[in-house]
Image 1 (cartoon, helix red, strand yellow):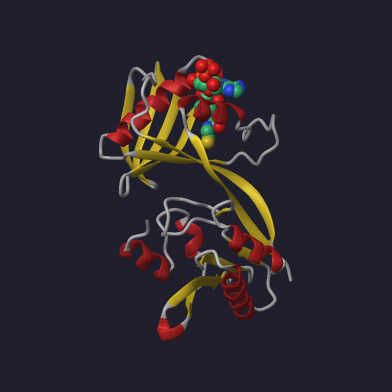
Image 2 (tube, protein in one colour; image 1 turned 45 degrees about the horizontal axis):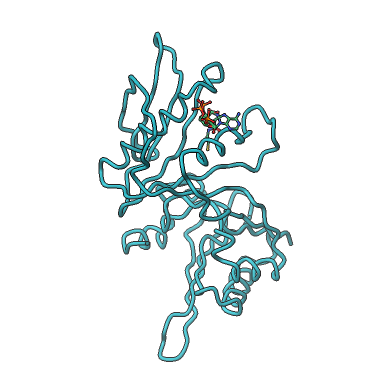
Amino acid sequence: MATPAMLAEALAGRSPIDGGWWAELEPPVTEVICGEAGKVLGVVSYARRPSDGAGFILWLHCHEDQALAEALIARALERLVQRTVHAFEFAAALALGLEGLPARHRPATRKALEAAGFTGRDLWRYMRAALPIAGLPHAPHVTVHECEDPAGKRLEVREDGELLAEATIGRPVAGTGVLWWIGVAPPARGRGLGLALLGSALDLLKGPGASEAILFVDDDAPRRDPDRDRTAATGMYDRAGFTEVDRLHSFTRRP
Ligand SMILES: CC(C)(COP(=O)(O)OP(=O)(O)OC[C@H]1O[C@@H](n2cnc3c(N)ncnc32)[C@H](O)[C@@H]1OP(=O)(O)O)[C@@H](O)C(=O)NCCC(=O)NCCS
């Protein structure tokens, strides 16, 4: 749930996640569409990036009414004028790191984007689990440091000074904590360390009050891509009891 403080950040054109992308934009324009008696029915926020002239639909809400979504998108396109326009390309301050449109939960918005000539890319698997998860192992000798970008904690497992595994978790917001990253050095994989570090990371999220954990898997790379194959990660999250909330899609429309 977005808080007034999160909305203020989004309106100001800032975001704690993907903040560098937002810093490249002109100040965003946010417009609402109203019904009778001034009731707000929908909202769209968009901006230009001066370096290449690209336009961005940053966020849009319309109670999943396709006609409203179409009107809001048409308005943004009219104002962004004949440029390449991206939609839901990076995270906003309104949510904890959703770098795309949750496609199954937002079918009318997706259809309206496609009807307006946008092409979607299915980029992320968005997962959640209620905490605590019973029965997960824990990694021995984990060191924990505070980190600022993203705001949260970094966990490390070292052997003779060498980094074997690492994980980054966010500071929980309203009971939800994000697992931003977990990785095990290639020679140490397949021996239970990843699952154990996941157990330790989720305990650290539960400590300051998270009742659920969410995470995003960038599983769009082809299998066997040495750096970005997420087969093992997906297997590990399934095994730990995470379930898919949705798939996150980003969209582009060329003039
Ligand atoms: C994902 C990763 C952290 C797993 O670490 P790991 O130490 O090898 O994992 P574990 O040995 O603890 O295995 C835990 C579970 O993951 C699953 N798993 C691990 N390797 C797998 C593989 N190659 N294929 C399918 N499932 C796999 C299994 O379910 C396994 O449980 P099981 O052994 O009881 O069946 C590691 O592969 C990695 O660093 N990958 C690259 C970075 C990455 O993708 N990070 C996640 C970004 S979202």
